[in-house]
Amino acid sequence: MADVYSSIADVDYEVQESLAKVLELRAADFQQRDMLKIYLGDIEFPEAASALDVGCGTGVVSRELASRLPFGHVVGIDPSPVFLANARKLSTDISNLKFVEGDCRSLPYCSESHDIIVFHTTLSHVPRPEEAIQEAFRVLRPNGVLAVFDGNYTTTTLANGEFDPLQTCADAAMSAIVHDRWLIQRLPLLIRGAGFSIKKQRSLGIVETHEPEYMLTIADRGADVLAASGRISAELAQALKDEARRRVITGCFFGSIAYGSIVAHKAR
Image (cartoon, rainbow, N blue to C red; front, side, top):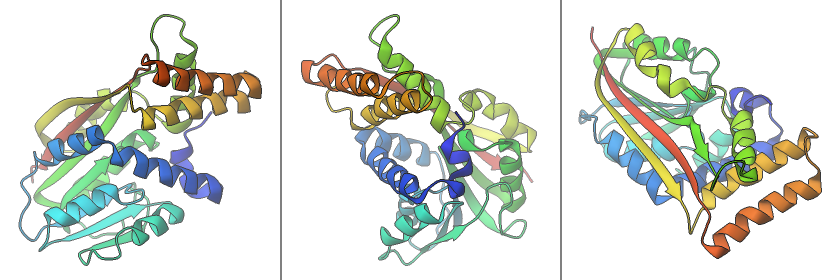
């Protein structure tokens, strides 16, 4: 099944609204917040910088960037008008932040017009991500900063052992919500190939056990994908969801995803 985010503007309104809630749920997790703070901490923010949050979703990272640039300006860009409507509602009191509909492979800005560009869990959903990175290079000013954070979705696990049925849910969910699970492994080559110089690279990750709100959405999404494809019955899909929650109650739930970040500079 194709990645729903790779053509998000064409997805049913109800699905987009549901995904918008998942984005905010994921962002509320303390581990996700910590990872965001860690890699943004690798950026030296000019006082009045102009920043783009590309593939901004509901504006989680855009809001954080705006708080770090009180004398600067932040624009969140996303192809989904539904996500952008939610982003605007959640940032009505932030004066240095606005949102624009657009495609990361064709940014609506002049060359050398911005200081910072962030791709936060964006590029793994983008067909031809090298085009987005090349666009970032074009739009950034000399010595501008590119920050990329994404998941190593090959590591997504819900398993407690071999042949764990919940791992089938994890794999099915990734097939439906990620275009390229191997993107993070190829990022250094793509970034250097576009002309950037890598300054900092980090390995990060999350583990959820006793309060696995986000990883439960992965279990549920995978079960729904399996049922929708006809591979399992609706009854079995519900049983898999119930099993995930049984593990939470009994203290044996485990969910994990590795992430990585790269901060790079435009050399010229």
